[in-house]
Image 1 (spheres, one colour):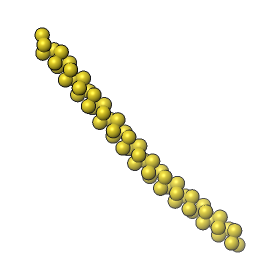
Image 2 (cartoon, one colour; image 1 turned 120 degrees about the horizontal axis):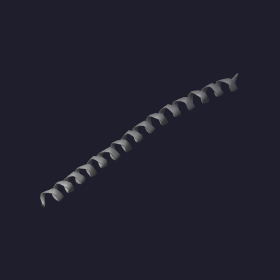
Image 3 (cartoon, helix red, strand yellow; image 1 turned 180 degrees about the horizontal axis):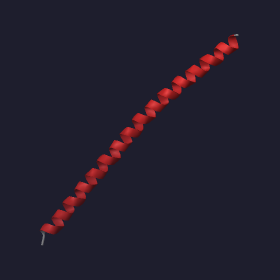
Image 4 (cartoon, one colour; image 1 turned 30 degrees about the vertical axis):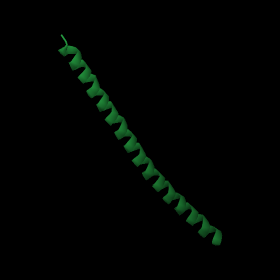
Length: 58
């Protein structure tokens, strides 16, 4: 009789750990993607600024 609640508790603890790893991996992927997007945005911004500065010089 006591084996069933113990199994149920272990199941929910395992499920909780899986959920925790899922949340942490999603946070890591979001931060990595955001860093890449910021790098691309900065590069595009520098290219646009360079075009405008060369247009203003002419």
